[in-house]
Length: 229
Figure 1 (spheres, rainbow, N blue to C red):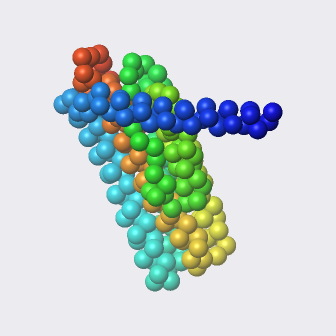
Figure 2 (cartoon, helix red, strand yellow):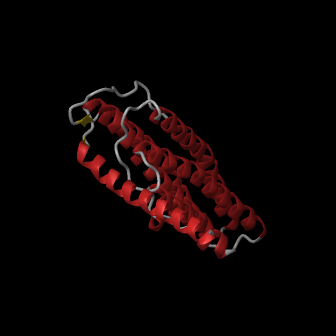
Figure 3 (cartoon, rainbow, N blue to C red):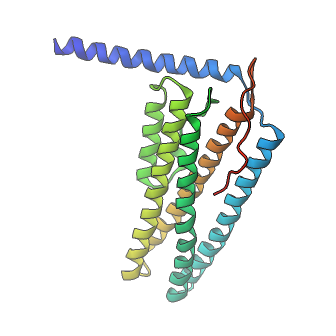
């Protein structure tokens, strides 16, 4: 009997996957994915804020790596700590934004479709695995709102993973300042934080589309007044 149960479960999963793919394609056809001028302004402000903060951390990390290559260990670690302090404030703000996106998605009548995260966008093994998990579960969820909240949840977890990996690499450098593996770890964590931020911006834009974009034969929502980190 166990084989019959297993076969039934696999059959149900296959049907869910096929139905999920069909549903996603249908939803894409139903949406005119355009932001209103107000929505575009809200998104542009958020994008500029995120990119400005990353521009500073990019510069700090680059100078830290240059100091490391020149053998200026103390200066390199001080610059690295300065970069971490900025990221330490930035990551929780992004997690807070994602929590707001998840909560607000429950108030939207219909969510615009959004693809799952791509494992190829990440370097840290833990984040690659999370992206694969997101991809695996994506088509088994029935609604685009559920897929959106799954994606946002994975992104929130991802910020915690990347920040923790950066911190552990820094602690390793306290004992072995010249450790190339730890410096590579810092660079990978920084790169993945950028990838997570870009994916979060994409999620933010999709929610704005759901609030303000024109779905055929229905216009229901306005963009919120304040969206800030």
